Image (tube, rainbow, N blue to C red; front, top):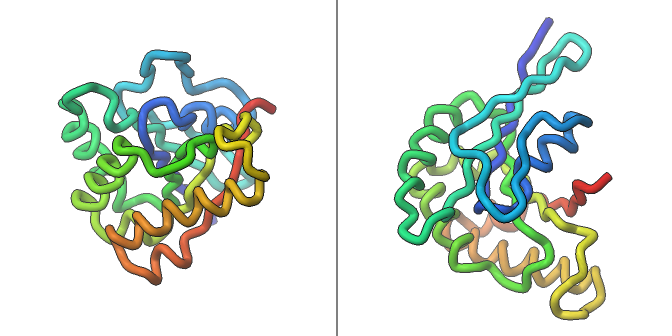
Length: 175
């Protein structure tokens, strides 16, 4: 039997969603920007794996402008895809110390628009996992503090059982 397995990547602008797609596929297919947003619409990338297809959806970064004028359009496009998604990667930088205002706005907007389907099959990916940490704390302590901060906020949006069971994974897209 053939199966298409779909993965949706969401997050703020500049968190490494496109770079993560390139790492997952092992080649540069998603354009990556340095200081300016590159992904302006939902992009689909397919990879054949045995008799299955891995379909990755790269989404524009939320909170990418001062007035977040594009967010409603981006979320509407994400809502169209979400019913057929098997897995959601929420991409956020590990090298931050707290849940930023932009991240809070993005997660609130996604949660309000999509509901429980957003959280049902989500993994939080900490990008920039090999970057210097801002607080000079031991790596494991920094990861624990960052995980707990996100779990606390996600608990406010969903439930304790969802935030408690949510998986987190640190990645680095440089190799």
